[in-house]
Image (cartoon, rainbow, N blue to C red; front, side, top):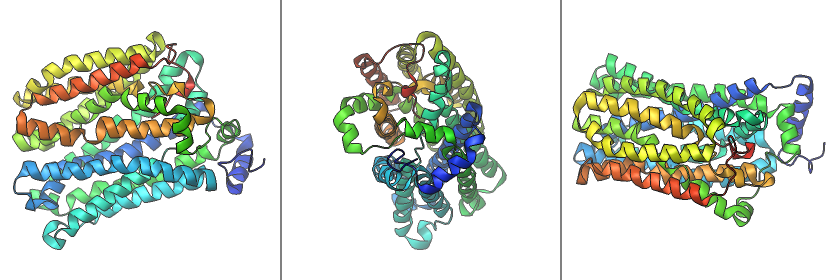
Length: 449
């Protein structure tokens, strides 16, 4: 096949696909590759997020003066990855078009793994002074930049293999990576918090999850490259189903769809951090129970979230994705009235907040990322979905821990309820403005992660 026919393939990639012509990749194998890939990304994400609460305020920002301010500084650097991610998408889309999808993924995941592993060696403020937060910010920017390039199109390939009456179920499969990744990160941190002294944990124990993150990235890279080198992936590229387009061209043709796509999952993405990163900071700073015990409660919540993510796929196939997301936003709005009181009600209330919150999150998050991207025309589906995802995470989740902790510490915990309600309103309005078809689960183009 010619370079023109398949613009995102190099000669080596096309040769690899010819080798695999007699070895078709089943949808189940694609699903496994997608889950492994997303789990590795979310594991990196949550290892950093948990360290932003448990480690960096004390190791990197001891000069802040008080624990709340130190945690706010830590959350500010946490947000940098979400700013860098769209930049990474723009750069790596060019790499994709010029050198191929496999090259793009290899570079992106090596940068992601390298940035994550570098954090494991980060000296604290007591050792190198202000170079410590500067290096942390640099490595965090590297994580976000690389994550923009980790967009592989495998979720869309999975959707293209979905039966018409199972598109909602297939759409939720990539979303399983988030609770898997969070549960694994929480177990690792919980183990070290429980079994090490405070001094040992802050000295070396917290570094081990970052080493594990690098190893998982290597495994995920090979799992994803195997599918990228498959005949099915090559056929989808030839049909322009997964073709990378220039970002400016996508914005010119589908700018309105990108904006709607960024705001449609706002309720789910805001909720995402308000049951994972923020509550751990609240418990750590203002009490209720130990951080170690709370981490394992969050693991239970994540496992429940896995179940409700699966349920979201079944519901989407029955009632339609947009309708389900609107119902989910309404439930999140209702939950926002009780969430502050649960978090402020001691250990029992905090546990209830996590369990209920994860259950609600799974129902919404399971379909949120594909909410309006079905409006992208076929040639712009891959790049449009990537850009929409970047902006949705930036708007909906990037500043959520920083904003929630800032509001709650300055004006009272009741303000996180207002934060959730604002996200729910944005989701409902965006979905109402979207005229995407409300079939059993929308078209396969509507599946993103």
